[in-house]
Length: 88
Image 1: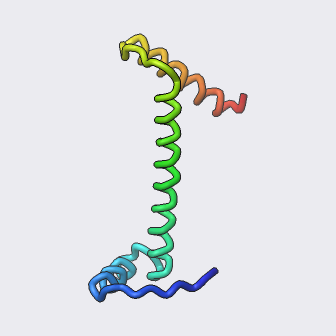
Image 2: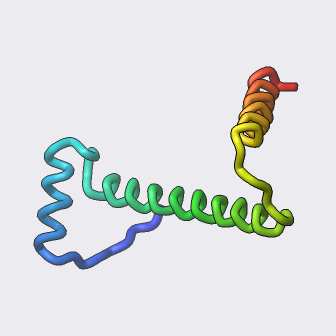
């Protein structure tokens, strides 16, 4: 691991200390590391969503969103989930 020294306003440091005191993390280091990991996860999820949106945009013209189309999509999603669950 690498040590990182950061300077924080007193109010922010007090907030971190109160979060640790209430049991949000065992110590300030773990609390900050958890925040960074959460941000990294959010960025990966955002990147993934952007990729999916672009795929949708580039997939050609859309079609009307009807109950029949929704059912078709629902069936495809359920089939994929079942396939993943059974490992086929």
